[in-house]
Every structure is written in structure tokens, then in C-alpha cells.
Image 1 (tube, rainbow, N blue to C red):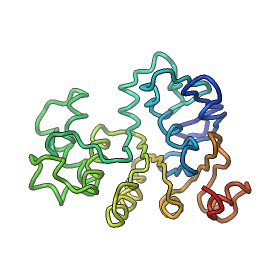
Image 2 (image 1 turned 45 degrees about the vertical axis):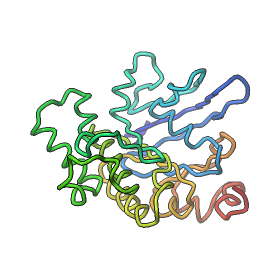
Image 3 (image 1 turned 120 degrees about the vertical axis):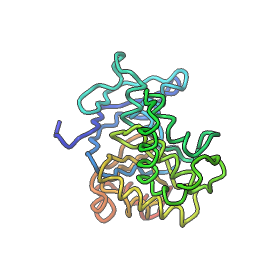
Length: 254
């Protein structure tokens, strides 16, 4: 495994119920400090694949997974893996902003407190650093005690990113993190993703072809649970190797 690979997936299959698998023999290497976009039509397995990377699918009864997912060489589906530890290393930002019904400060401090940080000075530093990391500090610094739910949709999504950053993850998963947002908020999150990849490995699901082309270094095209093509974004968009990839990105289907 090359030293730049953070997540190595081999022959991954997933079933939500007996019968045909939702993911079929997916293999790819996700590189460090790059943005990898997962594209493909609705229901093709993108979000399911994303959730295998931090075992969010464990929460669904009856799910069965075969194959291998290794995070920095460690098999994530080994029974000895502590899922709380795993989700500290690999953070997740969901499609719809989901702030907790508490203050802006307490939203960001929630994760560090869960992991045992009690010192007020240290928490203050983490909250400020995480909000700065999510490009939100200047907008909320004077109202940290106000309810997070009073923020706009775009601010709520950046707060959720700050909340994910507060536990100092290594990898950030984003499941269509801009699909519920207006164009200005979307543009802010895209700029933020470009900045965050200096420090984090980012894997993002998007339906938006232009967005995938703008923000990602690598791109993976899924269709009916299979990984059809994976490679450098520029190459995949300009010279796709598979006719189905070309048909999808030129809008012939999907």
C-alpha cells in the first residue's frame, strides 16, 4: 500500500437484505489530502459506499458487508475496532444541516467533551479554531451562546463542518453537503473544501457534475452498485475510459 493511501478498499460488497448486493466488488485507494468526488445517478450506491468508510451502515439492521476496508493499514471491519474511535478519525457531514438544539458554542464543544476535554480554556480554543476552520468564526464570534438553529442554512452547514473538525479527524466524509443550500452558500462551502484539503483527506458525494469538476482531484463514477471508473478528475471528465462514464457526464442519462 503506497504511503499516500489513507483508505484502501478491496472487493467490497454490501447487502441491505438477502438478494442482489447494493455494492458489488468495489476496489479503490483514496489518497491523502486530496478531494475525491463520488458521482453517479440516484440510487447507484455512492452514499452507501461513503457510509461504509466510517461504518454508519452498522446502524441499519440486517446489513452484511464482505471484502476489506483498511484505514491506514487497519482493517475497519475487524470486531476489535472501536467504532467511537473510528468516527473520531473519520468525520461525517450530512446532506441536510443537522445542528444540535443547543448553542453554537455547545455544538462545536460537544465532540471534544464526549472525548474527555473538560478544561474551559482548551474548549474555547477548540471552538474558535474549528469555527475558523469552517470559515464561520467572523460571522458568529459575538453570538456563541445563541441557538445554533437560528443560523441560516449555509451557516448551519458550516457549523456542522466545524463540529466535525472539532474532534480533529483525519478524514472528512461529505454526503451531498451542498445540495440543500443556495448558490452563495454552496460557493462558500466549495471554497472551504479547497482550503480544508491542505489538512484533511476529503471524500464527497455530489450529484453536481460541475461541482465535481471544480473541487475534486479524483473522481469515482458509480452505476448500479458498481464502480465503473476511478481516476484523476481532469482525465475522467476529458477522456473517460468507459462509454458509460462518458454518457453520464455528457448528460445522456442519469
